[in-house]
Amino acid sequence: MKKLASYLFFFLCCGLARSELKTVRRCLRENVIVFPEQSTKNYVQLHANETMDFPGITVCLRFYTDESSRSQILFSLATPAEVNDFAISRSHANQYRLQVHGASVGFNGLPFKLTKWNSVCATWNSVRGVAQVFVDEVPSVQKAVAVKNPFKGDSKIVLGQSQKSYAGEDFNQDLAFTGFITDVHVYKEVLTPLLIKNFMEAKIKFKLGDYISWRKLKHTVAGSAAVEPRQFVTFYTNREEK
Ligand SMILES: *[C@@H]1O[C@H](CO)[C@@H](O)[C@H](O)[C@H]1NC(C)=O
Image (cartoon, rainbow, N blue to C red; front, side, top):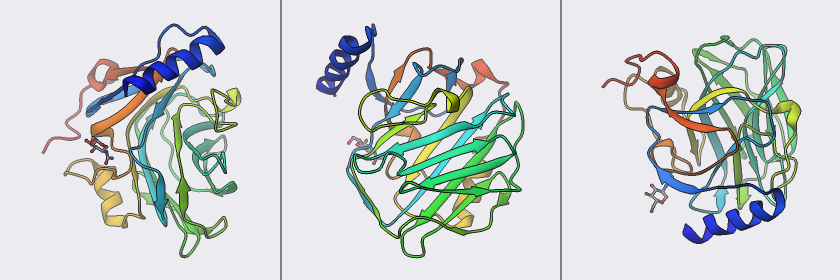
């Protein structure tokens, strides 16, 4: 971990005169990541323990933003072979967009609440090749997208920025996220709607990610992005009381 941190430090320091970049693992329960400005300098990288080798995926997260008219990236997973191996974005027309193995598909009629928490889960499986997006209490239809290949290779997962290449900091500023993101979990399978509902409601103990877990998150924070306790940025709610 030290080695990776110093490597990242060296790499970015020399390239961009960045002053500090630390990778840590910690439990981010009740913490959010704040993205205060639309700049390609701000991002959070999530580090997985293992190389991907699974037939399906589920990504769940919650976001909070005051951007209604601009497309914003919520989650970006790149591999050396495919920069848009799995990405979730919200487009201007209240549409959510998924990218799977480089192919793209849009989902309409899903909720979006301005300056409130929105919970999103997106799934895709290589057996049927279908994607589905759930937002709060609404499931989308299922849509066929992408070649039916499993997820393989080393992932580079970034929050707050749309990756333009696997290497380095190469982001599309137009899609940069502003607002708050929390509770990011990545699962090596397609979760059932019941398990997804548990995540949405966050009242009972929901299933934690087995590929990326917010509760044991190895991550690197860059630029003006920052980790803050949830009750420091929004009102405290009893959402996760057991
Ligand atoms: C990754 O490895 C760490 C350290 O062994 C472990 O605590 C954590 O649960 C693992 N993360 C996932 C998502 O399996």
